[in-house]
Amino acid sequence: MENSLPLILGAVVLGLLIGYWVRNVLATRQTGTAEKKVKQSLEEAESRARKIVLGAEEKATALLTDAKDGERRGKKEAVRYPRDRKKNSSARGIIGQKTQFFGRGRSRA
Image 1 (cartoon, one colour):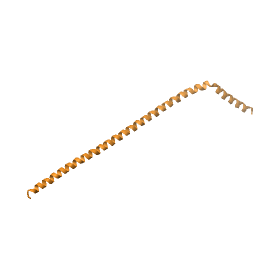
Image 2 (cartoon, helix red, strand yellow; image 1 turned 135 degrees about the horizontal axis):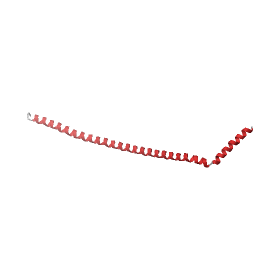
Image 3 (tube, helix red, strand yellow; image 1 turned 45 degrees about the vertical axis):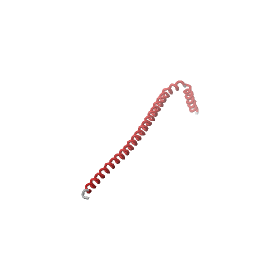
Image 4 (cartoon, one colour; image 1 turned 60 degrees about the vertical axis):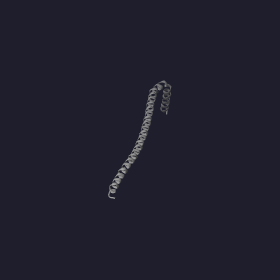
């Protein structure tokens, strides 16, 4: 019995060490699995963010292009409008006649 006490204490210590080691290995695996899940979630979020940014850049580019096209069309119309007024001198004559007509009507009354 006296000789079995150190043997029992040694077995308990050895069991505790093996138990600690097994628990440490399992905890490391679980941590590794959790880290992988977090990494995967982070990569998915970054991918979504890139897609959103690219979509926003495309929309901004399209809006800018449309605005520039509209500006060019507006400038062309602004340049063309005075030329059209000069070509349509008959419209000025009609307006001029109306003002003369009204002007004469007022002076007669």
